[in-house]
Image 1 (tube, one colour):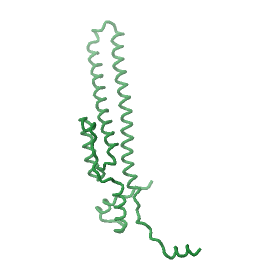
Image 2 (cartoon, rainbow, N blue to C red; image 1 turned 45 degrees about the vertical axis):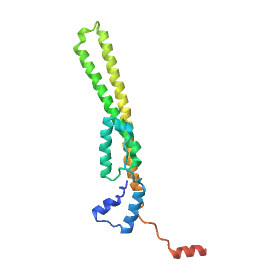
Image 3 (cartoon, rainbow, N blue to C red; image 1 turned 90 degrees about the horizontal axis):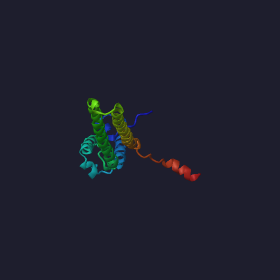
Image 4 (spheres, helix red, strand yellow; image 1 turned 180 degrees about the horizontal axis):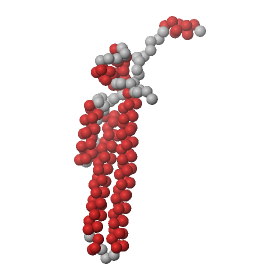
Length: 179
């Protein structure tokens, strides 16, 4: 599979290319037309959630560094940050359940029967597994968003024309009109 072409600013930074100034200008215009020019905004629910807010700020900083901090990506990035926060919260709940299981092991003798003890432990372990399933589905959604955003940016770069518009050959046009 061929490598995606480099963005115009990378080509300019490297200061070596086989492309003409005209080709670079065309490429830069096309790249800029793929962005809205508005800075990515954080949604209220993301801002209110401390974990999601921290993740949003981290991602916004990274996107700004590569000049892709555009509002076009706001929906998916905010959704990703909320999923990240939910995954962290699920992890805390799993840890709480696990601590409860460990406390039950210490208090095993306080149960009236061994069946009651194992029934309680089994319920807690089922809760842990249910939380793990929820976390896994959220992680799958996060992975899909990550892929989409990387592919969206990469596909945006691939959709930029490498060559400026082709010049029309006047002789070929005249011959075509004659036929």
